[in-house]
Image 1: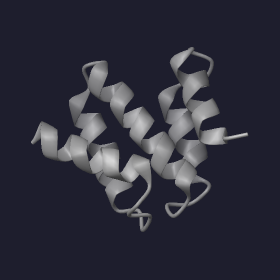
Image 2: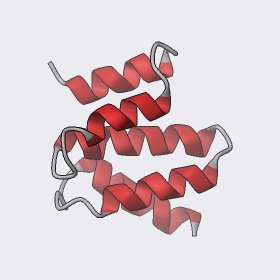
Image 3: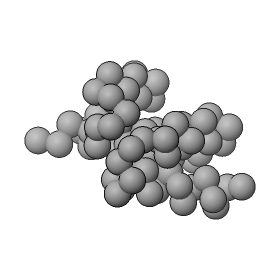
Image 4: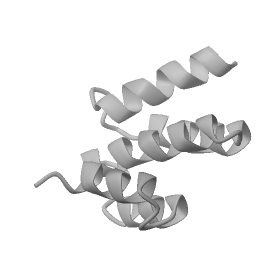
Length: 84
């Protein structure tokens, strides 16, 4: 039922690429939980695949979301703090 986690599973399995997952989540709007969840997941993927600059860009974008209590936003804030 939860499309954001399904998109991340598909991304990690190599069925879709990270930018496609992010683009699909962005289409739902910055105030959607899907955007925060997928944004964090894609940012984490970039962080752990040696692309920290791209990860920071995505984490920063997610922290601008109005959903202050979304796990993806909180995780993005933590990663930005941790990697600075």
